[in-house]
View 1 (cartoon, rainbow, N blue to C red):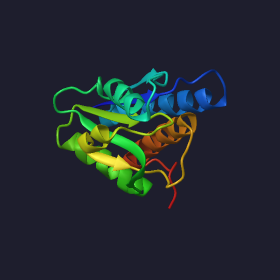
View 2: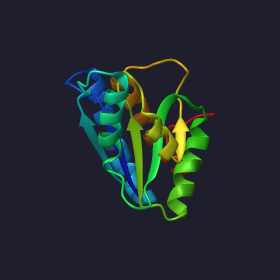
View 3: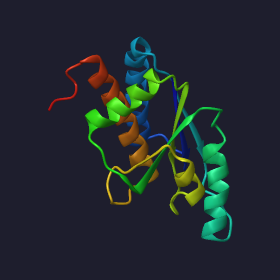
View 4: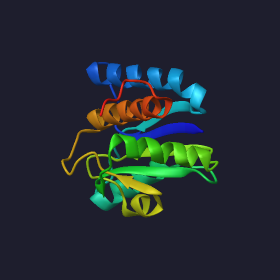
Length: 160
């Protein structure tokens, strides 16, 4: 199953980029044995449209452009469901076992996600009811993807 991230906001060189790169590199190496691949990030600058609704609409088009037939869409939104790391791992690998070929995670811009993205999502996740900068959410997501892989493989990275 290919795993991708579509995000509003571009990461610059620095500690956030290093964390993202580190966890994606780990995920790529460990994920191969479990049938996960890809680990691409698609990013775009924030929309410059005049209204919030227009910005969110513009960004929604970009965020969902990588969806293909049968893709699973997981949206990150503070209004989403909070789950544990083991439950996150279980969801990812259950989808893989069910034959899902592509999983796309989306991270919205400062105005959040357009409701059409949340409605299309197969799962809306929240890392917290707090609002986080896209750079930190991206690093958190990449770490949780790596953690999900280690949980599924029985690696001792995750401790309960």
